[in-house]
Amino acid sequence: MTAAPRVVSLVPSLTEAVAVSAPGLLVGATDWCSHPAGLDVVRVGGTKNPYIAAITALRPDLVVANEEENRAPDLAALREAGVEVLVTEVRDLGQAFAELERLLVTGCGLAMPRWLDEARDAWAAVPAPPPYEGGRRAVVPIWRRPWMVLGRDTFAGDLLARLGVRNVYADRAERYPRVPLDELRASGADLVVLPDEPYRFTADDGPEAFPGLPAALVDGRLLTWYGPSLAEAPAALRAALR
Image (cartoon, rainbow, N blue to C red; front, side, top):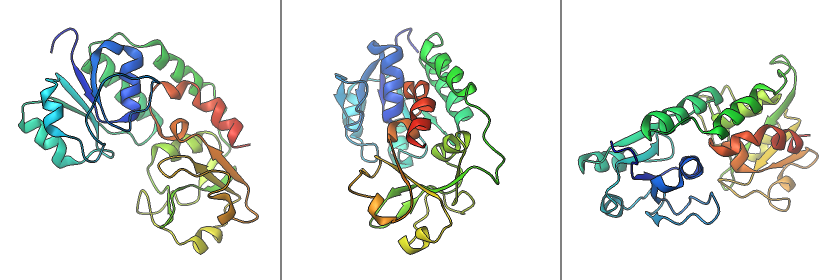
């Protein structure tokens, strides 16, 4: 790989990570890559339906993907076209830090970015959560019509646990189970956490479905993205969850 690789990112959070760390590397990103503001690169479709021909036309040295956000057939097509694809897997905070270092330092040949050290420090300063049986119990919808929630083994669930919020569906077999609304209401939760992505929950769309239950509206980027936002996430999420 060259000293200054041409990078295409198919993951919004990794797009931000590369663009903030070394803006000149990124030549393409998905239509959903909204950060950093003013990002000026070729758009190559969505995370689930990228334009393979458009990506290969950019002659990238590296395409960045994620095993959950991107489809295996698309990644296979890129590899068959001779493109190197780096696929991340992120299920918790420790894995996020390791994968970001693998991408930026090993994959892109960069020095460790300052924001990544700042993010590690920010999370290391978070007080230890109460014992598992303590703390707040929450349902965390990510979609409605049908209702879907965080289940087991999710990055967002790990962040919430570190902040003392227990996901009541963390022991479900599925990572993002569909759960009827009446079951969610009867789950025993004392909090509903409503991020603004992938479904855009707002003060007028979401809390009304859980009458009598306190609702915390949170920035989905701070809860689900693994990139520069990790540095500000602990303080901002703790404030939203109060």
